[in-house]
Image 1 (tube, rainbow, N blue to C red):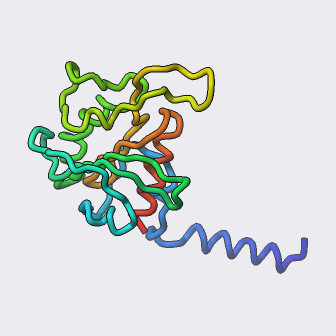
Image 2: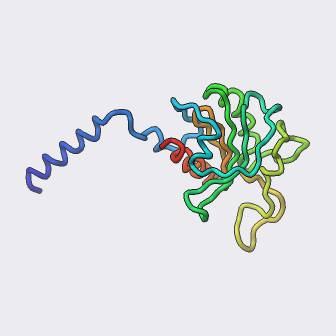
Image 3: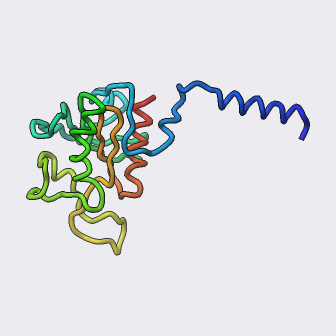
Length: 178
């Protein structure tokens, strides 16, 4: 390889490694909990095309100022359902909201009224038919949300199996962070 190409590659690598911390490198990983400098409102989600199906009464959801069930996708065919819960701060989202999110996500999610800590919207956290598509799948009632993410002051429950739901959360997080 000619010397000028090696020099160019070397300079390019140095430039990239010295770039400022303004990049989205913290948005590259799919962490369940990520702090953000920005404080989000539900209107921020509406502004990127999030569609509300239902707004929940949060009087019994400790610390939450808003909770909305709805859907979002960059295209109609990519649309997924979410439950967005807004808290005053990142610290509140973790200390007051994470236990509620853990309870209603994943394969072992609590979706029965008799066992749920927060009953508002519980029917929206269930789906009929099971996680598979097509024949041979299980029948019955199953958790809608496979995982959750906390991004800044927002707790979001995201549709899909445990394996893909965090990716679903992060598609929305990347859009709201633009």
